[in-house]
Image (cartoon, rainbow, N blue to C red; front, side):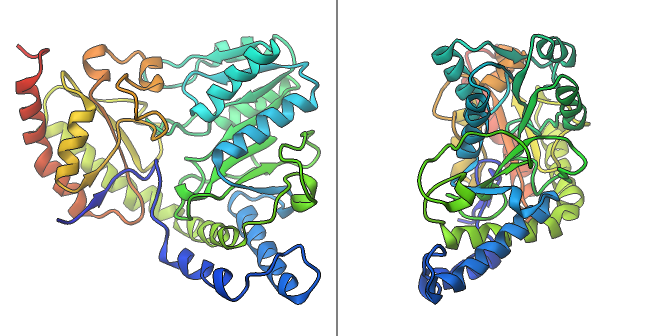
Length: 385
C-alpha cells in the first residue's frame, strides 16, 4: 500500500540533501568543535557556516542565533530567560491558541511566581483580539509571546503590528515561528521581534535541533548552565551533525518559499475544494484569507476526528486531529475550543498539512476516499437522525 503523508505541521520528512550533508559528521568529522586540535577545529568552521545559513533564512546576524534542541526548548529559553532577566517584575501576555510549549509554560510561571498572565482570546476565525491585547499591554511592562502562525489552523497573526504595539508599550516580544519559518517571508530586520523560535523538524531537518533568535541587546538569563558554547548562552557540546543538517534545511527552505506559496498552496486549495464539494456538513476552521499556504483544518459535523483518522490511515493517509503534542486527548483541541467551534463540529476537526513533497496524486486519493469514510461514520453517529 502506498503512503500519503499530510501531517507536516507535526513533523516533516528529512530532505535527502539534509541527510547527505549530515553523514560526514557521524563518520569523518566527528571532533568536538570546542577542542583546539585539528579534529575539532575542522568541525568548528561547519558549525559557523550552518549558523550563517540559519541566520540568512530570517535575515538575522549569525551572532544572534542560538542552537537548541527544538522549538519547545527555544520557547522555554526565551520566555523564562526574559522573565528572570526582569527579576520577575513583569506581566506575561500570550494567546489562548498558543502551542502548549508557550501557553503551558506561561501558566506554570504565573502559578509558581504570582506573575499575572494575560491570555488573549481569538474570534471565530482564529484572529487575535487586538483590542484586548492592547489593554493587556497597558497593564505594565510585560514579556509577550504571540505565535507567528497557528499550528492547527494555519491562521497567521499580524506579527508586524503586534510587535510594533509591544515595542510602543516598552515590553519584550517573543514569537513562536515554528510553523511560519520556511513557509512565509520571515525578516527580523523588518519585524521588530526581540526573540523568535523555530524547529528543524518542521522544515525537513531531523528532530532534535532548533534555533532561537535573540536580537542584540535583549536581556536574557542563561537557560542551560554549562560550558562556553553558544557564547555562554546555552551550555553543552554542540550537536554538530544536526546543526549542519539544520543549516542545509534552512538553505533549502529559503529557496523553496515561492514553491510553498504557489504550488503547495494550490494543492491545499484543491484538497479543500474537493472535500467541501463531496462531503456535506463540513466547515473550514480559521481565516481562509490569512493562513499558511500548506494548512487546512476541516470540521466534519457529527463524527469523531479520531475515527476519521483511523479510516484514513487504513488507506495509507496520514493526517491529524490537531497538534501532535495534544492528539492523545479525546477532547477537541484548546485551539478549536478557543475559536468557539460548535460541539457537533469541534470533535470532527481534521488538519491536513502539506509540504514540498506532496503531489496531486495524494490529494486526489484523499478526495476520492473521504466521502465514503464520512458516510460510513455518520451512519453510526448518535448525532445524526
